[in-house]
Image (spheres, helix red, strand yellow):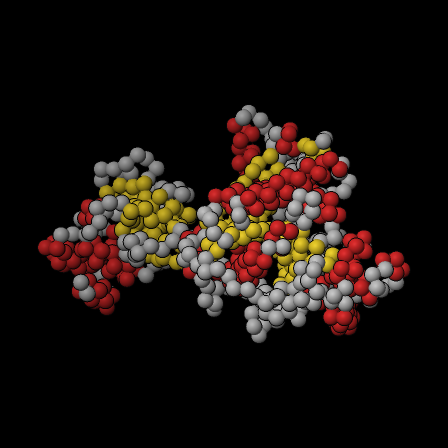
Length: 198
Length: 388
């Protein structure tokens, strides 16, 4: 359970459907695949919500030199912490807020370069997942592993709730999925199986 | 594309053949040079004086063919490297300025810590920055400023480094290269400013060395020619040198892995006029950086007298350079990173130019490229094949 906003990184590239942030080094407490994240919007109090769907580490010819060698710890830390090769975190936009109401739709404007991306607190995740309208945005997104992402996000949303509410939440989410995927029982079955993994 | 590659085919082929022929010729020279290295190994004392006159390597007390194996390094030691790059003033640009960017890396061996990486950009734009004795600070004048910025950065970092074995590394030569067409007073001022920084490094109880990758100097081979004519410098002038243009590194490719050659003194006039009197007389040697079983990689190392003449400091520099080079394979890791930190890429240069334009506009000044520079921006983007 998390109650404070953790900074993930700064926005490198952005569009209304999603954005990519860069962070200097992978840390164990940085959000993982399926995590809910937030970027502050252009107007005061507004925010754009998203789901992390990819974390990639870029390479270059210099770092490649050390793959087959056994570099000293100082070199490993230099390459990880100092070199200007960021870890890229890709985010699918799934909602926005004007500071009062959360809407599960694409934002009107993307975030701006170098805006900070934060991990959502448990309270924010609970507030965002009080509705399931964002399911459609995820299921229709072509650039992401949609089913895996939706399953991981629902498990993260369940974990953000008090223990006694988790099962009820997942059952409700399963019903929401059943309504959307009534015509695709194979896909529905796969998704529900992921939720049962709880 | 306006470079007619097809017209170069013949020239490139001729170049390849000429270089291959020269390499074959060098093979014969190397054999002779190595024979002479052994034959005249102990003639150092007799050759010291004439060697300086003909700008050959000046012998020290070590035999020419001395081999010093790789010494042990302390469990913990620090290597500090600095390197610089610059944007030259462009009279056709939106404003007249220069930029010097110095990158540095502090690498603490055996600490397990991430090295400390820094970049220090300095913008020159005032009248005092841009002109020296009425000359625009460009070319060699700017190179000298960059070299001074690099050595000053090294001295600053050595001054704040906690006590312990420390090696400051310069990329290239330790002898400041100043054009001889400048006044003697100007040359002296610049070299003395450089020597002040070497002095600060010494005062900080650190050592300093310059690293030259794939050196082309032919000073030891010139010394061998002098030895072959019994130290007679008049005969050196009159008789052809059978080792002409043979680089010293070819001579030392037989060094065992990690070993260094004998020490010699640089015959550069700047060394004798300024460095020696100040106690920083530049010595040099060659080191084989390669690991056992690999082809030799010969680098030239330059050291001030107070490092070269102190066996502990000399061993520290020798061991530290080999340790650093073996991280990457054949080039000191800290120098490679300092270069990376100093490098100003094309996109960075463009972004910086945009910053300058914005700053000028904010200050109420409209700026523009010269017509020549403007048309270059048009013709050099998305070039088409020349159809003339």
